[in-house]
Length: 85
Image 1 (cartoon, one colour):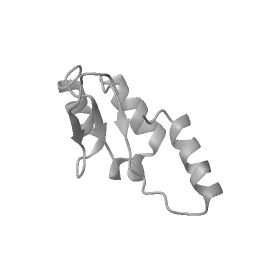
Image 2 (cartoon, one colour):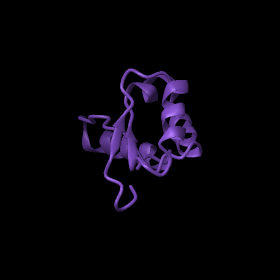
Image 3 (cartoon, one colour):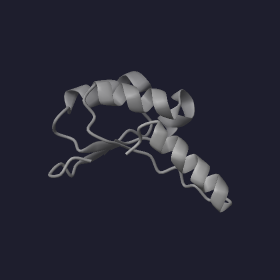
Image 4 (cartoon, one colour):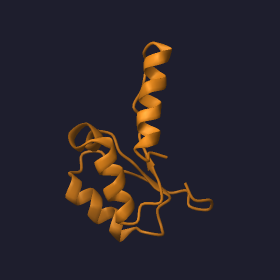
């Protein structure tokens, strides 16, 4: 997230085209986007990459990871490698 940009917009219930339009319209204003169901539908890397192309400064996903420590570590690494902030 970029310092000074504290507004995080929730994309809950949006489809990918709506989310991308919002990212484009708020480029430079919103500090980031909170996305959950979009990741389940389209995949972490695709959504993160596309939102950032449209101007998202950050993408936040609360995957609510509750599992064995090794599994949580693997999921966290996958999210990081996909570009999630």
